[in-house]
Image (cartoon, rainbow over all chains, first blue to last red; front, side, top):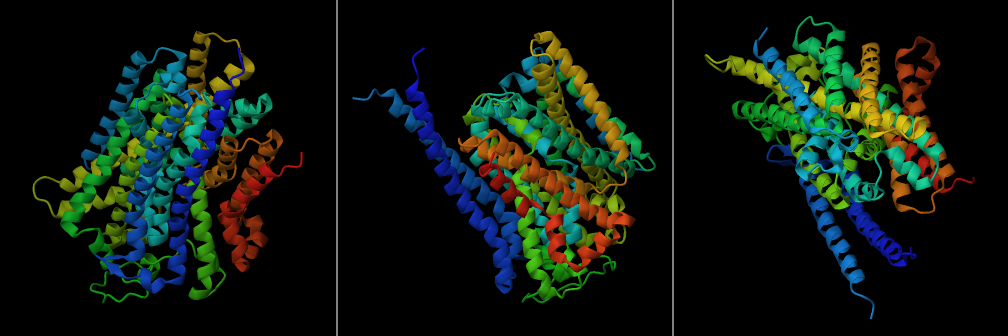
Length: 96
Length: 530
């Protein structure tokens, strides 16, 4: 069997790009997740503001967090699918 | 006793057993038993993973904790759901790409080392049985509560026997169907009573409005009589309450001095829950049932939606419980706040006429709790059985076994693991459930998660580094949490208890070890000198 350089290289590049995508989403999420305790700590008056009965802090953590995670994962899956397709297309076309 | 509770619970068990028989006809090959023929569709698999993940701790424990400590407890449902984002981003795709049956397969394939398979198997079994104990204890205690005077061992044996039967009959394929069904039972059982209660007693926001936070500008409208064990409004509604500031409060610090320790506690808790979710072997094993990496990602997305929607409800029950059933604060365990999910619907009886709606809804939530014990335990049993039958029998003891032998091995190992789980469950009657679940998460976050994360993405990882990091991180975290338990309970550990009282920082770090355990494990994996 001939050495399959193409697929190895393909996988490497795909993995690098996937990792970069994953990290950028994780950083966005991390800022919100780790920022909320900081907001609670440094701006307690702000986080105690009432919104429809909820305190702001409770509203963010108990309700809004879930849709935020859904949106982030939706973006990730879209981008990751597009990425795989793009790489696969570029490999199908023979290098000129 | 209300006739509805035993009726609905009985129905739940009968349907589960029935599905076991049905699955037996569907599952024929060893492939079906170990990875469900690797052909589970995204919808079924997402429901099944969610059904497996929402354990009794989620179904009853989260509502009880929110009622008991308030805001701080919200981190649990949120991080349980968010952990899946990390699974999606870093682990779901690559794990499936390696094309293995189990995590030990992955470990051996990645490092080309049978020794590493053995280490990984031991960890799967260890975390698995560790996580089984609280499920068993939950089943025993809750059944004793639902059916008054039922002895503790009864619940453990009933749940253990039914699920062992199911796993031995249908393997992973059978269990997938049962767990998917049980997810929808749980979703229905928690959401319907919440909607009905909110329509009678007022919505989520209104329940929170009745509590007065520190820094609050809203004038307090109603003072509810609560037993003295209930936390004060400010501590309950605001962050850094009784859960996270406990070590500092014990040391006698004032409220402002407690806050830095509470912040540290919060961060460590977040890391343990998020990374622990991404490192629980019985959840990960499910990703092997997907046809390919893309399906694995899509499954994870739907899991996040399904469990996210579910986790909106338990905190509402907790908030409702604080306002309309404050008597529960005066008692502890399932007689107190832990039983709020089962007890709260009963108050509707007073408001309804001829038809006892309260009892009916209580019966529905009880059946949901039953589904919770059964589905989580069945997932654990499949992953334990897989480790024993595939990794130990199929790969180490008898690598040349035939298809039929492997099938029989699975069934025998299922019965074996089920029996061990029942025995373990019988021994842990005096342990605290939430603590045990927390330990399992802390250990997974400091051992399995760094291993999976780095081995999927970093080519330079060595086998010795991986083993050193995983073992050191996991064992030190375990030691730390066990030391806090001994300090609380054992008489001979008195000096340790005294030390923890005067050193709130040490106590916080020992109770929530993820914040130092995870970096330690990663550092050892990355910089192992060997």
